[in-house]
Each structure stands twice: as C-alpha cells, then as structure tokens.
Image (tube, rainbow, N blue to C red):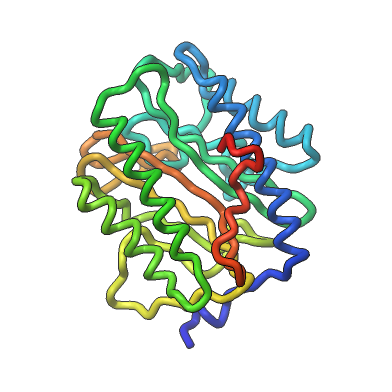
Length: 261
C-alpha cells in the first residue's frame, strides 16, 4: 500500500450528499457566469457575482484567503492556465477564452469545479482546445470506477489530449477533496511511470481537472506568485468536476442537476 493510499479519506453516503449540495452551489455559480460572459466585463465583476451567489446559498468562497489568494474566483484568460487573480483593471475582449475556477465550503465540506468559456467568437484553434479538454475530462470521469487506479484517469486525459496535438500541464494536478480542499491522492493529467498509483475505492471523491495547452506543456508563475501562464504564451484550457466513486460508477457531484452544466 502506498503512502497516498494510506492517507486517502473515503466518504460515507451522508458525506457525499453534503458534498453534492456544496458542488451544486459551485455549479450554479459557473452556470451564472457562463450566461453573463461578454466583452467589456472586468474579471473583478465576475468575482463579485460568484461570491454573492455563493453567500446567498449559505456557503463560503473556498479560495478567498486560501494560502493568501486575494479573490473568490480564479479567472484565467487565454495563455493564463490557472490561478488568475480577479482585477478591476482586466477586461474581457471578443475572442478571449476564460477559465473560471470556483470552490465553496458548505457545512464543513468543499466543492470545486472549473470551466473554460469563449468570449464571443473565438478562433478555430481555441474552439478545438476547449472541445478536446472537455472531452478529456469526460473520458477521465468514465475511469472513476472501483478497482481502477488513479493512473487510469491520468492515462485517459493524456492519450486524448496528445493524440489531438495538444499538451497536458504537468506542474499542477487534480486532487482528492472533502473536509479539506486538497486531499490525497493527487490526480495527475499524465501517467507517472515511476510511482505506484492508488486504487480507486468506494467513497473516494476526486477533483479531476485537465489543464491543456495549445503548445508546450511548460508553464511559468508570474511575479504575483499566483497566475500560471504557458511558457510559450499560447492559449490554455481548464475543465474540472468533483466526482465520487460509487458502486454504481462515477457520480459527478458538480454537474448541475438541470443539465445546464
């Protein structure tokens, strides 16, 4: 048994029900923002809307103050991969792609999901990037089955992304989630051949989050110590769902129940 396997915290059905409620708030935020995205908005406006929706639904924004992060919402535009800081000075423009990553704390449990959306009409390359990243997440979710390994999730993402001509980010990974925002095991988007991969067990909840670059897999962290950008400044996409392993297969907690997310 690996160290990661020993430290995995499985959730009871009651805990998963609370996590579903938490993730439905996240899904509601992301659905609201997707409907409102348009050129001319500031990223701080998106942050305000996200936090207001969260608090209106009796939850706390999980990212605000987390390790010093100043916003409630991570807003990452074009070559920004993850952890973009909301700003009154940053405006959305026609043709941008914007990653929206949001988390909540609700009744002691975390929810976490992300989506990348177009601002108006985007280039064919960006369209394909979003499509492939979204598809890689769906393929990964399909591997959340008892008895599989985390590496099966990683392989599903990596193979689909690379055969499509894109690259998976290696420096940042998905994770377990529960009463902590980040729990074991890590969920890389590529196969780590040198390490043993934990088994997926009933009650394991994972935040699976492919981060896919149009060019190189290499990234840099900007001087603000948060914003991650592609090393070649080509665009990136990020999709994420929180998923529970159950006896009936994968249960996507952050999929909006009315089917809009």
